Amino acid sequence: MRLAGVTREFGGSAGVRAIDLDVQAGEIHALVGLNGAGKSTLMKLMLGMLRPDAGRVELLGAEVATAGPAVWARVGALIEYPLAYGELDGRTNLELAARLRGVPAAGVPPLVDAVLDELDLRRYAGVRARRMSLGNRQRLGLAAALQHRPDLIILDEPTNALDPAGVIALREALLRRAADGAGVLVSSHHLDEVARIASRISVIAEGRMVGSLDPDGIDIERAFFSLVHQAMAGAGR
Amino acid sequence: MSTFTAALAVEARKARSARVLWSTGVLLVVGVAVLAGAMVAAARSGNAEVAAKLGPTAAAGDWPALLGVAAQVTAAGGLLAFGVGISWLTGREFADRTVSGLFGLPVGRGTIAAAKMLVYAGWALAASLALTALLPLVGLLVGIGLPSVADLIGLSRQFALGVLTALIAVPAGWAASIGRGLLPGIAAAVGILVVAQVSVVAGVGGWVPFVAPAAWAMRPDGPTSLALLLVPAVPLVFGVATVLAWRRLQLDR
Image 1 (cartoon, each protein chain N blue to C red):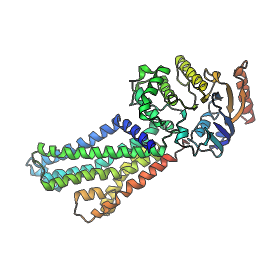
Image 2 (image 1 turned 90 degrees about the vertical axis):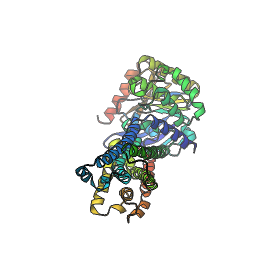
Image 3 (image 1 turned 180 degrees about the vertical axis):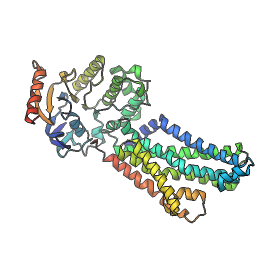
């Protein structure tokens, strides 16, 4: 995936400006920034939830605005809220999510079974989503985004509401997919467990990419805040 | 076509578990049947005062009376029930915040909206059929016997009224999409009802598409039956507008 000079502004100083970003096959790329830095806006631009004022967004070699079903079938994403319908149980939610991602009806059950085990959701297969805890609903949303083995994975703050076991299950699932060649982009407002497994960490602040962190560096927390504070000072805040 | 098949399978599965669609459908079918039956039973109680209060539609206490009351209640109650149903089908994705999960899929949002329209049509058709099937039972219960051939034609008109009423409720689905929630859709259904009432009072009723189905069901030989031809324009315009609204949707507010 590649973003080149992407800008989308809202009223006031909100939005993202002149963003260049890429995710290569087989890598986990973390996008880290404080709340309101522009992470969600950027991910919405990648998935066509917002249209850019300027710049280009390319997914798997196709322009986002004109990408066809064959491209989108290779993408898995979770932005803001999990795709989980309260009246449907875990299994049915996953089955519908697989259909919406282009999996033929006959191919759905094995995928659902595999992801129920992978994310330790088997106990909730027959439980309606409205009766699940926030954390389990998040797991369900992640399972829906990952089960069809996409080549490009985009997850916005995926560890939200997850318990430590859920974080580990997600981390393992992402490492497996990256090892199989998928490109993964995850966002976080702090250097959490998932951001720390990334091969690249980019920092966003005030709607701009302000630098990158060395995942193996010493005291990357301090380096992160230093980049953010410089950006805020530059923006007059 | 395969993405539409997937969207339709998904929307149909969601509808099957939808308490809103089940309860609204049952409420409409049973509500109209009970009200119509009760009015005719009251008219047949022999009390002239009660019969006078029920007005000319129900007073005779026969099959035309049962059909007349059913048509009146379907025209108003059906519009609200169908309006709630289609508002929920489109507006629930915003209310339940599932709409963000409907981006970035091989199945486009316009396709999903079209599948929602088809599911709505199936649901409305089933409710209209169920009501039509229930009325002969109500007739037997209130003692007016089985319908004659003329009454059977009246029953088929009742079925058509249900379907036509569902067609003129389609703008509610568009309003729920534009307004991004259930309430704008329900408000639109109430608005359509008000427009219909005002049109009747103003005397232009029958030619307004929102009034034409009820006007025709009450007076099939009336001068405005031709106005029925305008009715399909409503779901056509607002159905296409809904699909376009979903296709062009941005999560910018």
